[in-house]
Amino acid sequence: MPNLMLKQRLYQRYWQLLSHYLDKRQPAADKVRLVQKLIFILPTRYGWWFVLLIALLYLLGTNYQNNLILLLCYLLLSVFLVSIVLVYQNMSGLTLQCRHAAEGFAGTKTTVAVNLSSDKKHFMLNMHFVQPYNTNPYNTKQNETVLLSQPATTASLNLVGTKRGKYALPRIKITSQYPFGLWRAWSYVALAQYYWVYPSPDADKSAVNLSSDAASQQAKTDAGETLAPYRAGDSVRHMVWKRLARDPANPVVRQQHFSAQAEPSWVVVPALSGDALERALRYACQQLLQLEQSGSSYGLKLPALTLPQAKGPQHLQRCLQELALC
Image (cartoon, rainbow, N blue to C red; front, side, top):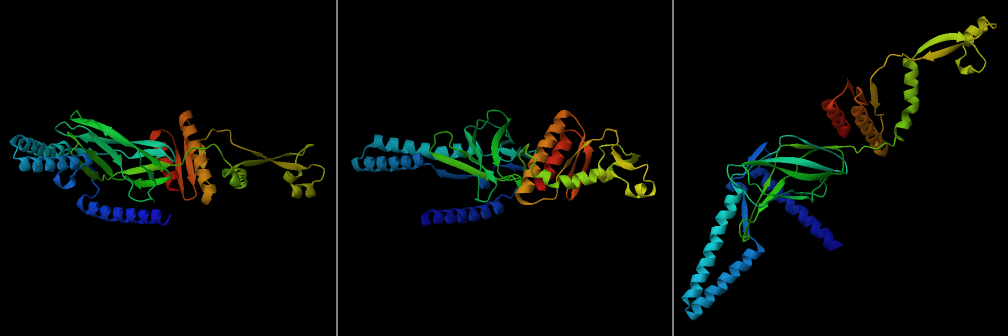
């Protein structure tokens, strides 16, 4: 266990230094073009074995003064050096952009569309999101291999948000070992875009029932009242006692009635905190999706904000974003 904790601290310290270096070298931007200062190149494990083979052939050729072995050694060295240029050319000139903010629900996969464009062909590009810190709300173990054989294409990368909110898109690591696998070129790209994590829909309304009494009282206040003669079975709580004292022979009761005019539905999130708030937000998300699917107009009432009634994808998006930030 102590060794594991030490490794985690060293790993976090490494990412802190690397992130500080990358933030100065390539700050987040709407569009990023891979140039020389953004591309890192080192030999692969296979490449280091290839270097060892070249060294052994050179020693063998010079020891026995065998020109054929030396010629093979120089040929392999030429291939090794030329592959540096080829792997760099396969990465350079590629432009990455994310035009729209990704959206998803907590605990589910969300697809992030990254637009790739270039004036030449690129092959065997591997892309995935990196997770610098353990506190990052992303689960970024999904990789995507992209074969960019057209002037422009789109890479679909997956993110799994575990906590609702609005977060900056993590860095994208793009790597390539094309064409011979002797060298590995990679780059960390930061795009100035956000990722929305909405509460996961849930039909459990137990948290909302905590404020049912207050909602019922508000409904009574908004309702109209009329007086009617007392009939057997009417509740004595609705009895007008002052009227009864003046005229005991004709008791009357209050009757509540609601307007028959149809009004848009309201999704109400009560003033809660902790787990109760999270349950209420999940239930509100379920209500919003159902109302949008039915084509009804609806509004959202939060403790500090009220969105007017409307309908449509843009209104639904605005409501879900407010739930994520609540």
